[in-house]
Length: 273
Image 1 (cartoon, one colour):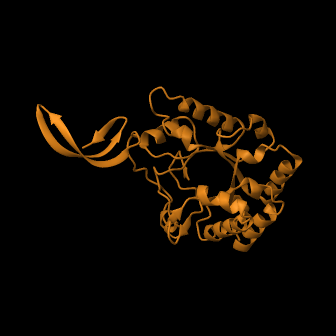
Image 2 (cartoon, helix red, strand yellow):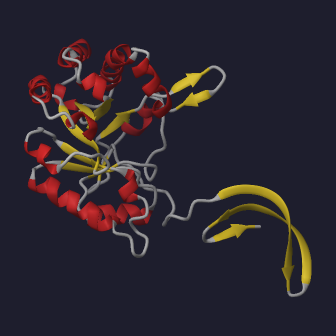
Image 3 (cartoon, helix red, strand yellow):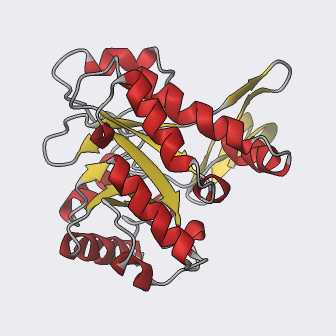
């Protein structure tokens, strides 16, 4: 995560990927639901904040780390104790740990949900509302849930710079709402310079995406925070339409001449031959 105003690195998001011996790297979107069904999510939920805090203890004090919390984990009454133990074991200040919670945990507006929020805030961690605007909940929960940050889903960022897109208006509305509620905002999935310029213009306080860094291991994350913590945006100026790789032989007719060629990929805006 990078502070939009001065491009200072302020934190990382800890994402879990499984390096399968035969299938290679598997995303959490595939194996976490299986872990939930198999009853393994509690063990994963205890390990993740502990590991994140251990890594965070080796980072500069200005750096935070965000950890995702599933709906099942949020429903676990032992969650505040698990988080508190992870912080105590590592010696990390609670404010450096940020728990990302999706709107799905708010669908059941119960006393237990409100009690969990209060317990986590007593621990001292920051709370972020993840994937805002993609769920089914209403804005009413923002009056009760003590979030410190709203994360703007990448689906609103991607395509926001295209002519006729309404995504920019949605982003502007979210940032205005967050500012009124004294919350930070993070634009997720920023990949191009024009997207970065737009989310800055619309008031996003933080930026996250390939525009600054590709996914990296905990060991590789040491280098970016070893110096002055300044990140450099170095991706394409603008986004291009998604391309499909083909790699097939074609015949191109040009000025009456038939030329053998290879079609490498194709998109809505053109093809590479």
